[in-house]
Image (cartoon, rainbow, N blue to C red):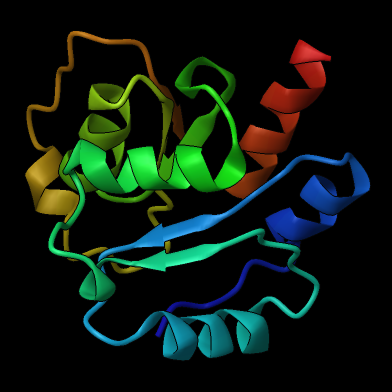
Length: 142
């Protein structure tokens, strides 16, 4: 199980009215995932939690990203997606027209880190190593 950062992103997201949701390639149900997330990030205000186990597709399928856009009622060009897997999250989001953010915290064990070797996408993305970098980016864009 991953550790939770001392400064959890929901604090900043909630304080600034940023809408958020979850798309996960998890093998258990969305209800179980929601319970786990709510236990670890007690102050989250996710509008939805999508578990790929409840659909026929897994990230990087643009279908799951499209489902999230539909649930949020947003256009892909208005959304950022943050994830730690360059194939499933970064390339998946980009293939759906969503701006990808690669969360690559080197202090956390990541089974997908090896897939990032030689990662050189032909699209723009943001590469962060901790949540404060994302907050800093948001603040610069204000």
